[in-house]
Image 1 (tube, helix red, strand yellow):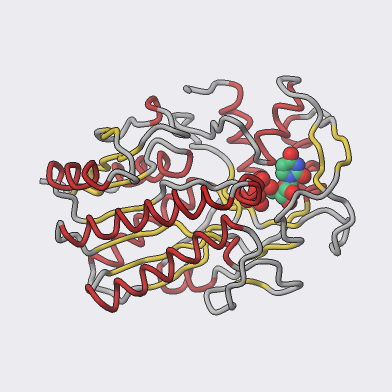
Image 2 (cartoon, rainbow, N blue to C red):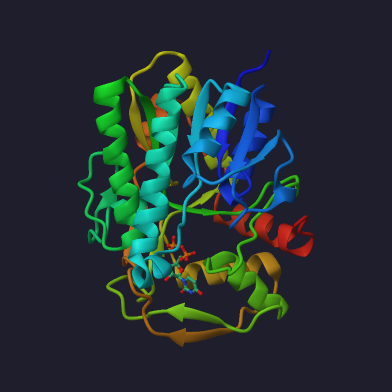
Length: 325
Ligand code: UDP
């Protein structure tokens, strides 16, 4: 019998790509999702349990039915701007949901736990390449809620022998190169899909959020990582735990920062069209520069991110022309 893995948020953007990677590696991904921001049609590689992390009983039922060997926890609210407008929502849903899930996993005897954290836990640290040892000082409620969950996992490691791999993602972009799954947020707030919609006229011009940051061209710098590379890291993280290795934290990015203007330049090349742009004000909660030092994931986990920004924009562009959902 293949190992089952409970994937919370498996109907979402990153979760769906992780399910594809898990299935390709011989696991059965069991998606647990309330479909609040995910899509039923994205669940293609294993069963779907419609359930809510705020409802502990629904997690218990799923764990009892599917008997997973591990949990991968993707389900979360993840919008920086929204988290600044409604921080209570982020503490309630992200932290409360994770607590229910962790306690349910422990009660069901599941010890291996892979968690999606974020570079937003670092805050704004001028000029620093962010790695696993960089102090975490979040500047928005989204990052604060993810840091709280990391700390909670630490407490349960110490008290209950929970075994964790924590991934801190940088800016995830692109789509499955086979076009089976891709990015569809409603509302969409992310740079690359908004930019591509501006190119086709599906949406209006892209607003550049701030051009007075202390960066080379004044726009924010981010480290973009292809969602398929990111998904591959999760399979490695699961194997890491199944091999009995110690709990670990890994940053997932490429080590290469791109400003908003540089991303726009790449989009022009990939689409061969101009991107309509207007200059706007800064967005609350945005750090000037977030660039990853991902050496540990490469050296220890054996992760090999193979795709660059051009690949991400190309795969996102193909998906946007033929989305399955
Ligand atoms: N951004 C922008 N215009 C938009 C959306 C995003 O200028 O309409 C910028 C944003 O300020 C950030 C970068 O693009 O510097 C990436 O933002 P995104 O929302 O994609 O990811 P985040 O960094 O918030 O995780």
